[in-house]
Amino acid sequence: MVYVDDLLVLSHQADLTMKALEEFYQLKDGFDAPNRYLGAKVKKWHFPNDVFKTKWALSSAQYIQEAI
Image 1 (cartoon, rainbow, N blue to C red):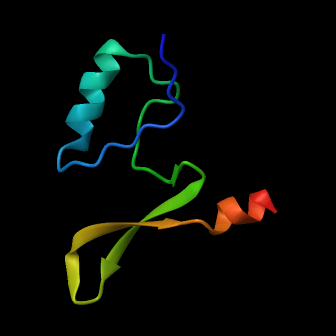
Image 2: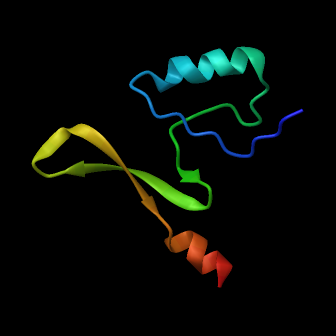
């Protein structure tokens, strides 16, 4: 038996990957774009000179605040 608390899929077709996993495994809350991963806040990021490509950023501020 395996229990996974967090799962992050990085892909151009992440929805297809998650749907395939959902066929075999029960996902507690379904799936959506990430907003938190391993205690870090996740958000989409766009550089001003490249607004058409989405980048992802991780912030440890919330994790550190909760640890203190």
